[in-house]
Length: 173
Image 1: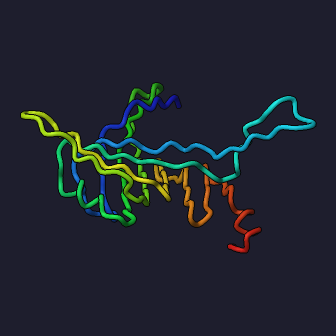
Image 2: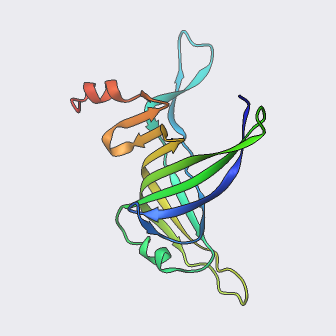
Image 3: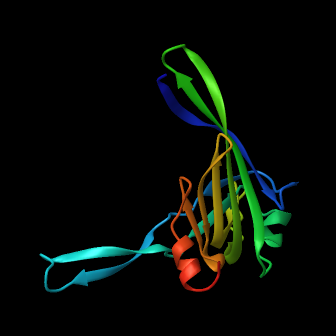
């Protein structure tokens, strides 16, 4: 089975699982491990060692065509629960058939920046919202592949819970 993931067919942005927010494009966060340089006797140089299950700031950005009610609503200084639901198209090179795989990205985020954009005749205003992501869960084809919850010490990647032992050591489990 030679599945070739080709493209994201389309997606929608929801708040609290059911309120469609509108037409936007999304810049998903980067998942970048926090690191510390390890050097000294017994090491030939330096190693940027990741801190297990800990990540730097994760930013999500929604880019809107115009200023909309959701643009302003999402500027409210509170957590917002957003669901990004998409359909990924893959081509099976063996059978010559297409398959659609559901993609879901759920985030809990806090607004950092709201751009109201520009006003120009006959043009988009390019409004945007930028958020700090404190929780993210990515599911593909109904299978959870990433879950990071910074406040609750959860870091699961492909089913492996990297913070399980840390939660136990801290008396949280």
